[in-house]
Length: 265
Image (tube, rainbow, N blue to C red; front, side, top):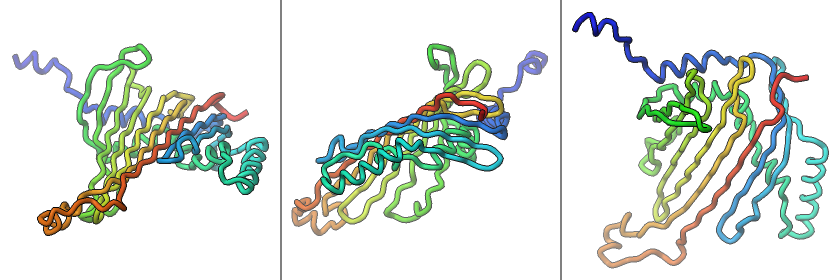
């Protein structure tokens, strides 16, 4: 029995193994890609008003990060602004897409290994299960991410719930990742919340693990709560929700895709 136990390999720590793989992609070599960005958002009463698309180019290297928007897109954005001044009901699809473009989203997409390593700092493994990705066998890791949101010691702000899921192929390389983030807070008669779901399709180019596609879905809500939940005396008197308080919600979905990624020409 002792000899048999000695022959069995020790069970590895999946998160430690994942960290070791991610560190193999330091993303030091120059990298460039063209990107397509699509945004679709809606809020109560203005469905479809926040929809648009655009393209841009990103290049990162020793000189830093460069993002280039072509003159045609800049011209379209300027024309849309002028048209909206003439008629506030006019839509601005190019400006809507460009306003959704953030530096850190681009940085995370260009260097997905660093993004995932940051999430794994202080994280704990929830579950490891067999899975599939793109029709091929994979291992799925469910991970609880440590929140870094300030203010959670306040009684009005709840500790965020953040879960990361990573699909790993038979070679131990991450091929996809998802992150669900749920934030909520309450004050007086309103409970506010934000749910964000992000997904990345991952690829390798040289010493870099990058997101060939990124999808993000943001949903915000503000829900009235009965006064009796906050003031017991109002509950005893049969107080109800004031008519001035109505549920509000909004959503925004964005997707980005890198095409022609590789070393700068």
